[in-house]
Length: 254
Image: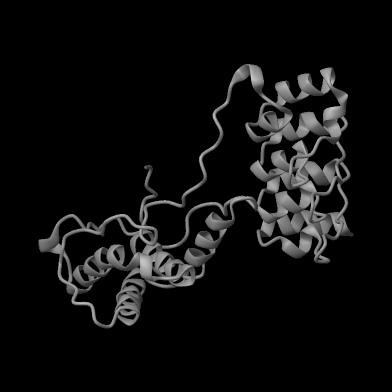
């Protein structure tokens, strides 16, 4: 599994002799979490995850997972909320939280932290379906940013412009969600509905904005996408948190 580099390269949990007492306690606590994971609820695991990531890697350094990756987004938020916390403070809070969650524990040093749901090296994503060239769909073309394939499929089967999956997503939704700009341009040029809505009345622009994709947001706005409201009365601008995305949407709303 690929690992993101921590903000503090001097943190090396593999050499116990060089560790401070706080680092040793942190190692012991993260090892202990493996033993009690089944006893913890999701909120407790998320809190531990966020503190662990802040302790070992510092500020959140990954893009926010897509709207479709609910678990990944929750884990990203759990890490991001600690962005202003120093690594040492995050370690201290992690240890205190483990002690609070299991007051009767007797933590002993057992080496470096082992991987668990609440202590992993990177945000996890669901595995993508295996691609078979002869069976690629318009959704595959959108997801994998295959602009030429998207154009070819639309040319052969114009009805694909309106095709939706079980969640009501069109190929444009998928391309916007993945920031697949080549596919996005091809789909728009091929006549796909720029303001198509999913089962929650969200447009491709909602997806691009929510996922912090400035490029996809700009492409959709330039193509004439409207700032429509979803079934919770939210426009893409209401959901956007990324500064550049908000700037693009604010300009479009004037």
